[in-house]
Image 1 (cartoon, rainbow, N blue to C red):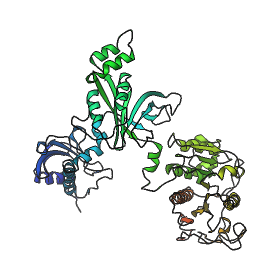
Image 2 (image 1 turned 60 degrees about the vertical axis):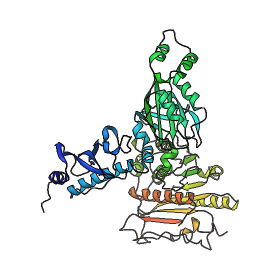
Image 3 (image 1 turned 120 degrees about the vertical axis):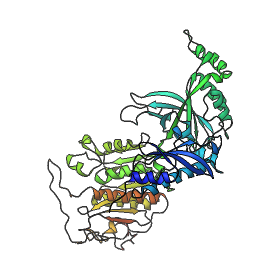
Image 4 (image 1 turned 90 degrees about the horizontal axis):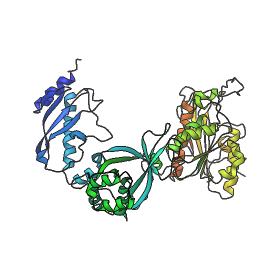
Amino acid sequence: MNTPDPIWTIHATLTAKGFTYIGPPATYQGPIKVHGKTVTVEAAFSDPSFATLPIVRLVEGAALGERQIAHLLVGGSICYTDEGGLVLDLYDAGGAALRVLEEAAKALERSFGAKSSREFDNELAAYWRGSYFYSALSLPNSPSIVAADIVKTRAGKPSGLVLVPKDAWQAKGNTREQVNVLVFDRPLRHAAGFPPQRLDQAITYIAGQEKPPPGWRAAVLNASARLEHILLAAPNAIVGWRPRLEGTLALVHAKPKGFRPNFLRTMLASRTNEVMLTHESATKADLRFCVSRNSDGRIGLIGKRIALIGCGTIGGYLAHLLVQNGAGCDALFTLYDPDTLKPGNLGRHVLGFGDLAKPKAEALAKFVQGFHPDVDVDYRQGNALDDWAALARCDLVIDATGDANVSTALNELYLRARRDGQQLALLHAWVFGNGIAGQSFLNLGDGLVCYRCLRTGFGGQWRYNPMRDPDAQVRRAPAHCGEGGYVPFPSDAPVAAAALAVRAAIDWAGGTPGYRLRTTIVDSVQGRDRLAWVSPAPLAECAACSA
């Protein structure tokens, strides 16, 4: 079957709609209807596969009136698709071209509909423009003025400029500048002449906002006299400027023998039209935002005191997943492991060659700290069982050792703590056999099964065995260079176990713990076709929890 050339198809489709070819790469100009009125757009189809979306630019829109337009970017490009993207059929190039024009028309209609101002305000930072940086600043919920720093980060940190709390992120090589942040609890709204270009216009703009923070005018004038950054932080945008003096103010500031700051401040108050604004804008990058953005309304692990015992193959992946879901945000996240990283660990560990011979807990703490500098993480190299008093003060203890002896000992300590009335959750995660499955088990001490009675007795059969042949022997491989024997399996099994555990932790934190024993079959040859998630009843004869 011969497929028509997509460029030819686009050309035929657009010319039939009254568009004119104006040049490569496949660029056309023509009319579209917006609220029944005709405007002229230019559409460039540079990629006939549509992996790169076409660019549509508003050329002439006088029929829409003289006003600022939402969804219109630098150079008049129309933002006609959201972050979810627009799916276009490369096998129907003509239909795809028409769909692009249709979406561009819809975007312009939203700009001039009943909610046009809200559309603009939702994208306010895009129209403010200016230099760009990240904001790792957690802001208060009420209107206020916050002192902060813009840090130019060194190698190994996020590149460029980051807005941080005053005096935070102290590190050799970092340079910092004072920032004055005006916090709004209501969205910023655009106004005539947006964005402001001079300080007098900025003052008028702030005064027109809903509930500006108390003392904002004096703060803006004082910061301007010191040539400090000024930012307006609101739910819909973080925008601001750095002042630049002109005219008489610039001459006073440049006097060879210096100047009195109070004198400049007094002059500036009556000459705000001589202060030009160099625009700046920031994108939120604080830890709470980073870990909650994908939570889809779930509570996550923010504010939960969590300890992870075992920083090996499961614990490494699990630590990263836990941090991405809120561990270490507003509460301490503690890692335990007495061992060091060896060459035999590398094939299935999240750590790499550069961490060889380092204590696993320390290296993993540094690794998860790389997720965000504000992660509150600590590590212990000793035996976690000897530190039970500290573990018992946590909200959640996670056993990722994969060692039945350690797991049984933790189970016993946990059951004693529950009998003493301590409200603590214990979560186990392990790989079954030679990577046949990953399993996790959550113990809340609420009358269901404990770790010990997941078996029929000491040395007995596993009650929920994912192996197709429950009598098959686990293969062990000898190790070299002084390492002990180990159970070989690929890295997909510990990833599966870690994924089960982090979801169990999230469900627990959200108050819906669900099934306590969860299994993911990884090896479809050696493993069963499926193993249902269950919340087993305890064994009457269990030596641990039936006493």
